[in-house]
Length: 103
Image (cartoon, one colour):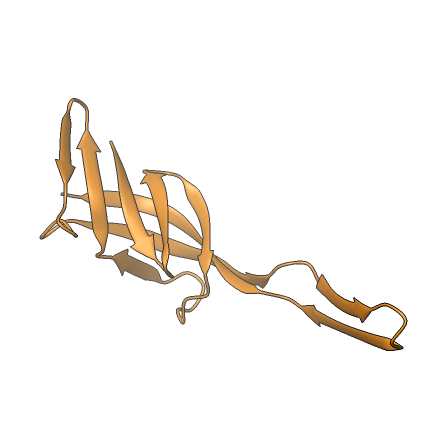
């Protein structure tokens, strides 16, 4: 059984026991979170497609950690103009472990 869920503006294909990285959620580590925006649900041979979401379906996940990605360097330069700008960014994310999929 697997499902396609939407969170943080992105879609993820998940199954029970999977670990996924999503955009930062404001939930403490160890707490459970319910993802109610289920777009597709496949149980063996039976597939249910939502329009846009499946009513009553949800995915329960546990927050494993809150972390940040490695440093991403942003460098701008215009040649012969003595123009250089250097910035960096570290995107925050949440690691979720899928506990169960409820149809």
